[in-house]
Amino acid sequence: MFEQTGIASAEMVLSKFPPIERIARGRVALAECYARIPCNPCEDACPFGAITVGPDINEMPVVDFDRCVGCGKCVSRCPGLAIMLVDGSVGDGCADIYLPYEFRPLPAEGDVVAALDRSGAFVCDARVLRVDNSPANDGTPVIRLRIPRSELYAVRNISLK
Image 1 (cartoon, rainbow, N blue to C red):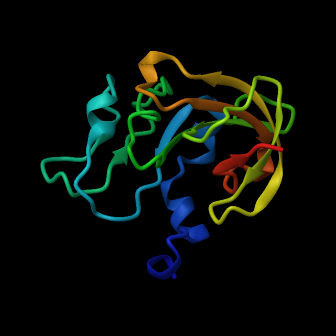
Image 2 (cartoon, one colour; image 1 turned 90 degrees about the vertical axis):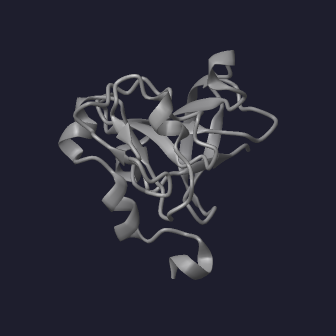
């Protein structure tokens, strides 16, 4: 189905996520790459060596969740917008996700936005906690969202209301 729609199945998505115990410890990156393409900016961006592509630039990146400190430098560097951070340590039945976002206008901190799944369908409301559009992000803003923890595996984008 992925080959026809470009939308990852639940099994494909889960295969890219860190174990829930790691998510609960704090921010960690995951790379939702599902095809072999020549790309490796994420590997170069990680100052901790937590993302490896290897000598064949066509290989999919692998995140070493134990080495990842959740700095987020990789999120804005991925030209395919395939990397995000997840943080299950925030409590109150919530989680934070950090998404690359290249649409305009940008949301503002405090906005409530529509959180969308990988097909663009509405999942839940999300609160924008931060919009990082700093020069260090190389032109790709990173949006920090607070979502219900139960939707951690579903949310992958947003739409402004």
